[in-house]
Image (cartoon, rainbow, N blue to C red; front, side, top):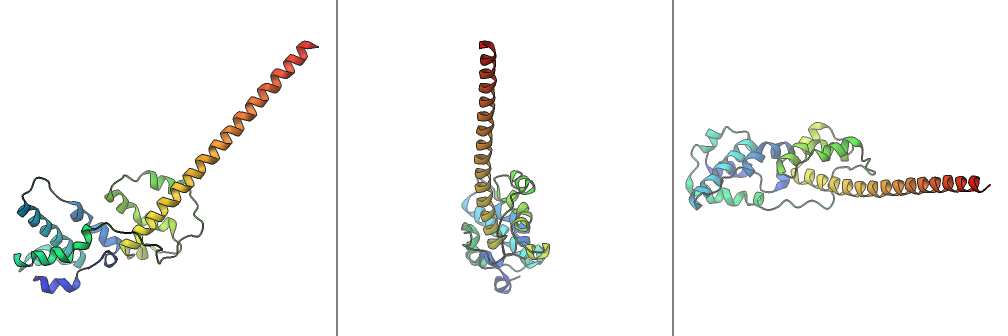
Length: 199
């Protein structure tokens, strides 16, 4: 296909890509090789972008490659320039988030399984979004734009960190209270023994 045929159909910002689409193109977004010449890097970048275009438009890759001219490579790279810029979370996602967040054991497990990489986060995003929003179906979550989904993720991370910090403080207070209770009990027992010996 010619660039001018696919260009109007392609996303021009993160908000144009759904969570489901993001999960499908993630491999092409991060699939790069090292030690390539500048020409090879450019060719690889175009190859990845054509692969992304194929997945986003649901058009077979060989059909995308057909008639795509090398003189259009720069246009394609410029069109997708937004994917090379960090996605900034929204101040407030448009979906209804839970007013009070129950940091359940399931939510803790969901976060503890996350690895510090994009793939792990992307695979876990539907579950995270479902845990921190109200009334969303699986289909609505899949069709949520990726920037909004990632904003919910960042909100969830913030809530989990705060909750775990509060939990640590609570457990520390309970532990100190228990230690004081045990120390006081030992002191009382010791005092009773001393009193009974002195009688």
